[in-house]
Structures are given as C-alpha cells and as structure tokens.
Length: 161
Image (cartoon, rainbow, N blue to C red):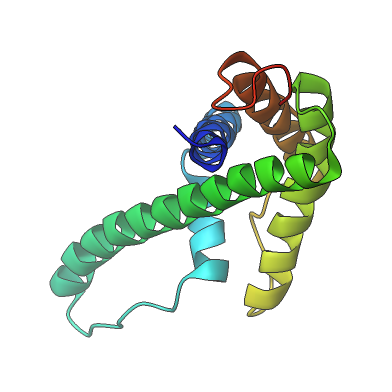
C-alpha cells in the first residue's frame, strides 16, 4: 500500500475522531447534532421550502438526513485529503511524521482548512460553529492520531515516516 493511501487512511481516522469529539461535546451541551446542523448551513446550499406543514415536516426530516450524510461525506473527504497532504508535505521536507509533529500539523493545517472553508462558505451568521478552543483541541488530537497511525503503520521506506 502506498504512503499516500496510508495518509488517506490516517486522515479518515482523524476525521472520524473529530466527528465523534463534536458529537460528544454536543451531547454534553444537551444539543445533539448542533455542530453538523450549524456546519450544514455554512457548507451546503439552502433546502427547498414547502408550503404544507405535513410535507414540510417529512421533507425536513429527510432533508436533514441527506444534509447530515452529505456533510459527513464532505468532512471525511477533506480529512482524507489532509492526511494525504501530511504524507506528501512531510516526505517533501524530509521530516518525521509522528504523534508530536502530527499534532502540530493538525493544530495548524486542520484548523486553517476549517476556518478557510468557513470563510469561503460564509453566508451570514455562523451560529453554532465550534469555538476556536474546542476546534483547536480536536484538531490537535486528530493530528496526533494521523501522525501516530502513520508512524505505527508505515507503507514504504522503512525507517522514515
């Protein structure tokens, strides 16, 4: 398996961690799924408006499920690309990728990717978007997971990750 494939795997693992982190944080705040709801308003186009209350209710439940799945797919795709990017960057710079350097990568690159995407997708007030400290914490640990995974399961070039 190639190193970039391993980076994609590590990124997916980090993405699942971040999703779980914010799910638990939302449950603790007694607002389950508040984060994906807020982020779907930022990243996904507005939904269809229906006149009938019954149709609106059915459509809103189905629409929510579709938006949640779309946001999850987008989230995992971005983390897969960031994991592959970590491998490419660290290989190019000839730096070791481990839990420590991965944590720094996650703190900086994952956070910049999030806030850059929020800025590009900004359509108004960003109610419910995670606070910077919680995002930084999640990204720090996600980066550490990425680095540790790649250190533990190298694909090629033994002795250097």
